[in-house]
Image (cartoon, rainbow over all chains, first blue to last red):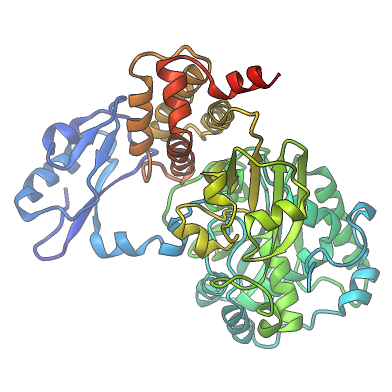
Length: 93
Length: 412
């Protein structure tokens, strides 16, 4: 399983369409992943601290549906422009 | 001067013909320099009117940057929001203004195809656009420089979400596909695609004719220009065009809304409840509303009658939103349904002892946990209801009574 190399800050992301609430991620990385009442992950949005990187890699590798992955943090924060974030709305601009 | 988009013959007269449209506004000159058009839109400050309020010039530039002359313009007239009627009204009465905007966009961003994506339930709008396309095809002066396809969007809430719209054109499946790649990178037929709301396109068509200074002559403190809004209330629903920055109170006067409302829902099913006191002096301006914790969204302003129960109204909205989940992502499927059921129990006086606490917790957990923002929108609406109707929620959940209904009983 490829993971982040040294230096670049990363966060975790979930492919919500793939995720099927197996819950392995929360077992392996409880510091950053909680489960809701139906077993779906609530993932901390912050950068993964260095001390948790090894556990995070295991959690990513353990997901049976490959729904958990790393994302570069800079990209993660740039992806949705602030103007589009609030108020969030469905219909395309 | 208002109206702008809705200027011309009375709306009841139906679609304006190409001849009348051209006599009234003059022809729209072919685009010589796409960048110049985008610069004018940037100076105008025009924001998208589908709900997200994204700056239009940035969206067009993002597509233009990636286009090799083969981009696609998807004019979004899905309007799945149940409280909104402004897009269908515009399409049904000013179809040529919408088409002008779509052609302008296509020429400015370098597109060789236009898709008109119109909610299948908006029959008058679809008919008007169909005839308008035929009128232009038959008219030498207006003959299409760019081919136009009219496509009926499924009558669902999420069909208008931009990745869902692109997915439908590509694969006949109007469900969102998630965030990357975005349509401007890879959309219809894997080409850069501009998904733009029909009202936004119509504004662009007027700005291209009259200039950005003209557009900015009216408007609010932070956001200039005019906007179509749908006003709803006990008396029904109507579409009107306002200067951005018009206050809720002024709009209520304009739309002859009678009496003092109990609360106001701004932005539709994806929006936020505000108490009447909070709402009444607010300017309908995307920036000002965002600062007030609300949303301009797609321009829905709904007045809740004082004799109506906010919990009951919210329960109905959330039940609809849960039913409209595309059923792809667990948090939306299970979370929204649970929120809807708990709200229905509270509204009906059959709440379990921990329903209100769970409702609060669940509503705070949904944001950002779907492939699209459907759960975010519904959860935001729910959280605003929990705040604005806090006392009523407690009365319903703990004491199993509806203060509004009791008030009605006393008044009768």
